[in-house]
Image (cartoon, rainbow, N blue to C red; front, side):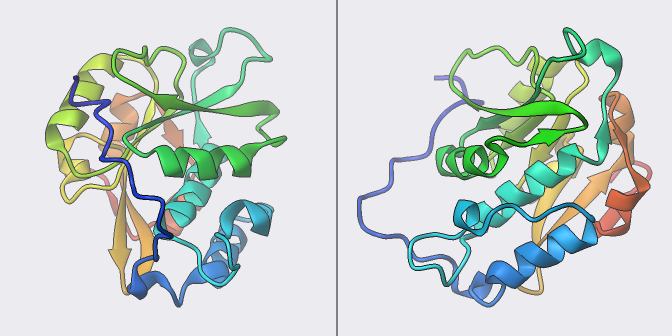
Length: 210
């Protein structure tokens, strides 16, 4: 199986506890993100797990991915027509994809509907505007970047060396919060223009090579 779309082992049916260091963030963090980016917050029921007390890390990242679309500008060539949707592809993170699908349901960004596409081995990346690559696998990211080629795609990772490997945005845990770093060089290379409003809430913005 291709390294890009290899799925992590299926979790057991037992309830999964969120990482303790993220427990204090919960809904205030998600609402804080929405306020910082000046967009309506996703419905609580789309992000909160059963019990309603704590947001798992994946749900916080899913909310970020949805917000990123509103602050990214893609060239007209990235769309088949004026009514074409914005497509988020998710590789290696099925649960996050499910959370994200609930968040974007019935919503539009920049006048376009938003679709979430869980990716599997050999699925084409044509038409994917934001690609999230789960896990920390450099080979998977290299495979994705080769497949993307010159296509305008906002690539988001959650790996230790994501930006150094070529992603545009990389998630990090900073002081018990989900934050993100940005590579403007990678954004330019991928023909994606990021709003200055997004950059102001980034943990770190790299203007040159990370």
